[in-house]
Picture 1 (tube, rainbow, N blue to C red):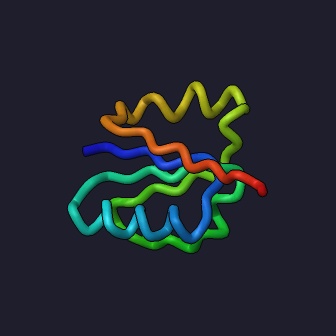
Picture 2 (cartoon, rainbow, N blue to C red):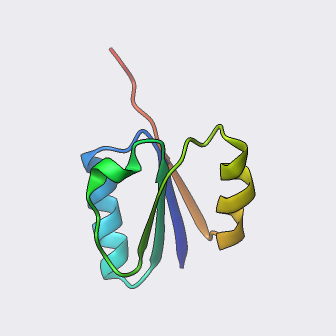
Length: 76
């Protein structure tokens, strides 16, 4: 399965990526600060790109995702 994880990436994103990667899924992590996550797994691709940029809309859909996970935070 092809999975995109984007949004406000944090420790939650790293945990999700590791779990999905264990199950032999192809995981793409895309956010403007994705390089900070330090994920080095064979079936994980990290793109440091802001979802509001046109290159995101041009490049990311080419993966043909089965699942998209958008992580958001709520400030209280």
